[in-house]
Image (cartoon, rainbow over all chains, first blue to last red):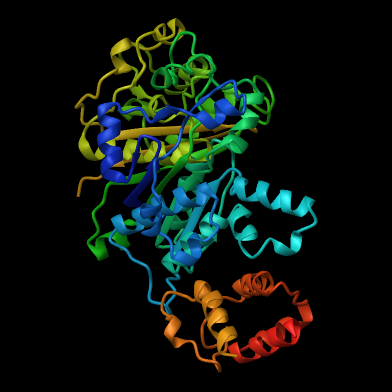
Length: 424
Length: 80
């Protein structure tokens, strides 16, 4: 018998809001965190707008010791620590005393490429023959698991401490992995989530692939247009989202506040066969992933109240909607509410699934579905499948009980999770 | 000695963990065992000493840097 798993803590460092309260305000009021980025313009990027969390040195000093902050240029670690430490504290948990290890708590915190700025600086010094001068900070900031290592040291985590990486599926996948570890009784608490560096070196490759939106450099806030006609690319984002997952038993014993229950989920790959490729999802696998998640969560398709989609605005949105519709067997005004946070944040890559799940859990908590921004020109193929009222352009108080969240990533990988409002 | 000692203290203090104060540093202090400097950060201490005194400390000389006193002895030899 699997243990029931609940969410007891949330933390977020997003382009449109740093800290849970700011983020909650932002998502329900349609605050867009996308700005013109002079650095990208100076470097001849086609897309010169981006989503970056706004954080100050003073803020960082609250999350890192002065020694840790010395030469800490890995922005993913900045964002991940802010979100992760916040989530841990939000759950009513704290850093263990210096000699004690919490063997019941672990970390699965994902990323794509970590510490790119550090890596570039180190590569330059290495090329100049100055490898001896690199110091001790390069490895811990550029190893993928650097974020989990920083968080693990803060918490005193003694259970599994690792990092997952599955491109834009990463953040959502980490939640499934942490859930499974607790459900199987191997841990009581898992800090899960994802982070992603910001900056030209992390976004350049996407610009070169011509998958970013180049048409809104003068109108950054209108640049991220999921589900819209003529959506011509995503806006690069960054940041981190974090959740504390906990066995229901442990949460009740501690008397912790419970945001929602994790019902279960599924992960798979389309094998880069059929309509799938390195960069595009195989629709058959996407639908299978959604259906498998429903089975794992013991949920009937008709029970889903709202969907937080992947919906990046690259032109694949109609295909995603079709996959949801076919997998759930629902369409028209029977289709669940659906939204995409990416209109407000851009695509936060490895952090996307985690930031977006935090948004979804806040929907369950507050009884609202946040409105899609830049939602004035919905693609006709989407409207052919979904009644317009199900794609709200304003926040609506519909008291959703069951939330579906999916993310899809390069490598043709998929993950879908189901969450339920917790009623004690 | 006094000049080197003060200079070394200001190099070392950056790498002290939060629960160790610069006032805890004495000539006899062991950098790792007593001042609790992370062994990975010893490399950074060495780099900072090298830069400050314009000297080179080889890998096999690093074990001579166990205490503040012995570090000063090494620096004196190198700068003599």
